[in-house]
Image: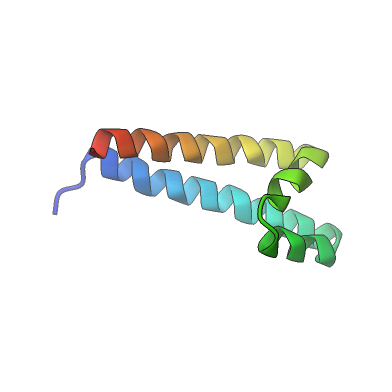
Length: 78
């Protein structure tokens, strides 16, 4: 199976978005384990938490980049 640019962007976009979201959740766990659990179980709490912290803002940029790569890969693969 040969990988195309679309499939590479799909997979790498998912990986970047997952890494950014995991980084935000780990940052939340180091500060307060309760907020870390909220990041894992409450939808969109990662976004709320990330907006309040300087590190989270940088990680959200990575999350947005991953989503953009995923969308671009989906458009190229179709």
